[in-house]
Length: 618
Image (tube, one colour):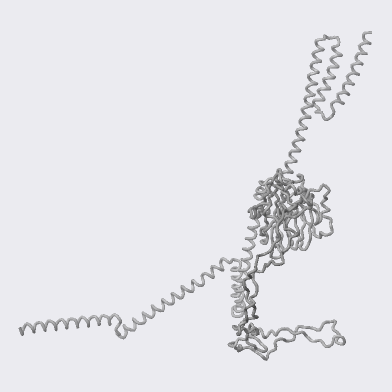
């Protein structure tokens, strides 16, 4: 009986172990580390076996085994919790890393929108309008949004992913750089910062889509300016009005380089417009925009009218004035020059026009219907080779006696009261608004919506932010290196163009010698000349060195030749004098000196003789 009871107990234990195993597997899925699952299952089985083996053992041993099992189970649960926590932390790190990467790709942390167009995600976020008015396709490239073709209208937009950007609380910074690579003749280069509209779809963009700010360069012909237009909602009418910046700055886009444009709208109702990081204009929203953000306090009285006796003419013609007797109103303004003479080579018999020798009868000319065909005439080209041809007339000069039509002089009006203006009354629609920017709709998207007559326009580094430091960072990091590289490239191109211009000049000059050399020199000498010419043209430094040496050698040769002629002439004179005993200039000088000395001695002797004679008589 005891054996039967033991078998029953063993069966019960085995069934219990299997149940615990299934519960364990169900409780600890395969995601649990293998080691923890193994330890747990092994412990449960060991406890079951131990219980079956030591069933008859002491209760103290059973308690120790139970405590051991509890400790292991707690350890496994802790391992499970730590593993789960590790996975959560790892996933968080991955999310942070990915967001950091996105932030790095965007370039600025905290900017509402910043696009350098260097990532593939950038191109997909800009959506072209499907409206039929836009016949130009904006191309997405690493250098930016490219408007490649001229005489096209372009429309493309992108939502502000950082959420709407409101006015009045923080500074609003709008910035981008644009390059007119083929010149700026007649094209817009501005962006529209669209008003927030939850129902707006990028593919529905049109020229009527509402915007909050329009900013950037615009030019057609000689006139060009930087637009800054703010759409403000009038409190009285509820209508949006465009407020235009008065006296906007000019544009520097004609050089074909990239230029960065920045608009900063501050919550203290001031603004700044910067071009290439230089403040070109700044001031107050209330003073520098038209029409004004606020209605005028006083307006003209519509019921007021100018009195009938009001005189607003400061002067009138003098009724007492008379025309002088010698005033000739019929005298011409110009008269023939009486001192002019016909040039000697002027041919009056030569016709001014001749038949065009290159003219041909049109293929569809029908003499029966159109009559005889006559070739058109053109100015006589022979007249350009002389002073003129045809009948000669003296040129006209201003008439010194011309006075024109006589008019009464004006005198002051004694009844003049000054300009009349209606009286001013209080404007019933006037209101004060210390925070006009609150009436400007938040920015929800940015759009490139322009008509371009120039091709090769590139928009890049578009920024919307509430931090002015972002503007400086983008300029230093992105625009300045690009601008310096473009300047270096333009300087290089100018140098190359100058080099080619010089090369063309010297080649044309040296090639004028070729026909003479080919005609008069042997072929081998001509070949040597051709090789030397190409060497000098390919190495302009040597050519300039040769050109500099030639006049120097000529001067030295002339100096040596002149010196030799003088030396040879002196030698010839000396030889001739030696051969003929002809006195030289030095001999003549010495003879003259000796004669003078002899005359002085004779005079001295005569004086002494006279003194002796006086003494003897005495």
